[in-house]
Amino acid sequence: MRHSRSHLLLATASGVVAAVVLIPIASPSSLAAAPGYSEWSGPVNLGPVVNSAFNDLGPALSKDGRSLYFQSNRPTGSFGGMDLWVSRRTDVEAPWGLPTNLGPVINTPFTEGGPSFSRDGHWMFFNSDRPEGGVGGTDIWVSWRPHTHDDFGWQPPVNLGPDVNSPSGDATGSYFENEEAGTPLLFFSSNRPLMGSAPGGPYVSALVGDGSFGTPTLVTELDSPVDDMRPMIRFDGREIFLASSRMGAMGGRDLWVSLRETVFDIWSPPLNLGPVINSASNELTPYLSATGRDLLFASDRMVPDRVGLVDLYATKRTRSRGRDE
Image (cartoon, rainbow, N blue to C red; front, side, top):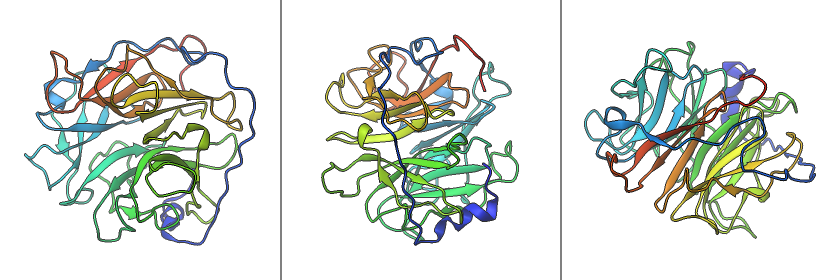
């Protein structure tokens, strides 16, 4: 993230309005696989070392692929409600280790969830319904760490303030550097009431000159009459995932994807990821890796290797041309 620590922490200030201008062009002709990538592989349950007998969801993967963050309501070692946990591995081919609670700097007796990182790994956005310092309902918070490989070096989190958060529920999606257009963006979901739109829509807020986030704008081309949750954008801004029970879902919530040719274009109509990824149960909280090759999500699908009520899964694709960034 190009903005300094002190600069972004001004996000608690109010009174700055930012508009995001989108210029429409024709949408891509096919979304069977994103250009430059293969199809997704069959999802793999992350297993009983990571998953518990309870609810494990909201995964987030560090840029080096060696730290897996997620939310869980497992009672042992918890501070109450949903907490944020981290599992680590020595390299990207090694198995995941036992998860560790992030501790009282991040977690509270209330609910913490939806972790998401800036591309440089210094910032973590997450949502919490803690009442102290909140705007109302569930709010988005941000924490900074000086060392990107220190999973327990997070500083006390700061609420993003009333320009981004509302008295309703606001939940993290993904932070996009947006270097091509020059305006960093925060994608998130909110069930705030908005005339002409159903609650639970995808929103975007721009980081403006003083380090605060501007007034959010509904991403209308991704919105539907039902909840559309956790918009997760690829590092180049040309692909975005979300969880939704919109018409065409295979059952419960499914994972959907939308593409655009450039960051200045509107998004194409979201396409269901299909039966390789989705099931007759719920698929939730997608998270795309920094390379764009790994997709993590949660599901309560009824399968033989199911560990708990909601488990974490991972699917992969290869880069068919170009190079990973």
